[in-house]
Image (spheres, rainbow, N blue to C red):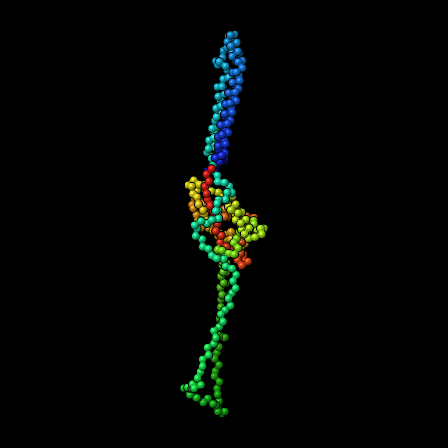
Length: 313
């Protein structure tokens, strides 16, 4: 339910206290005013003279200090004060501090995340040398025996030899269709790394000198962005749901965010809210600084914990 006004506990207490102070001041001022009139004694002299002359026809002893003539005004003021207090009570809202980064915001807790060692450049080992040839010794006493019989193929000069008839080439007479082209090779999917030599970073800190300074600055800016934009789901707040949601996404080689998914959810639409905040990162003026492996930008999985902690005022 959306409301036009909303008040925190402190604002509601200030509103109620202000109404009480205004009422107390009005009572004090009216008491002081009527007390001053009564203390002068002019009212008693005036009405005693009226009684002596017979002109005293009023129903009140001292009509000038009759507070009941202000009853209509006091009723309206009281009605406005009560309505203001009720309006504040119905719109009382508990807020979490905007931009508050909880302690251990980047701690994944007991979530089992597979960690692989970053692979650095390694020299390719040379191929092993071929095995040396094996020399077999053949004894000189070995006599080769054969069963082939010598056939005399000599021809006399006076004999005629007919050439064999040429055989028709069947391949030349038959026309074959050209073979179909080979199917195109499927493009190899680019590998997605889990851990690289230089992990991806939130934008806005590339002007710093060292890698450690850039990483610390990027983590701080990322957490500030998340907890400035996060909104505690009402269903989770009403049911007292707290915990850590872990969102995993791919930081592409160009710095864009893709393939976001909830690895661990705590319910109460907290996972959906964490996904919404992650999707806002693609709308930033600058993209993420991509991860690098062997000096080349690569695709990297990034695990982001988002903590939901109720804070009661």
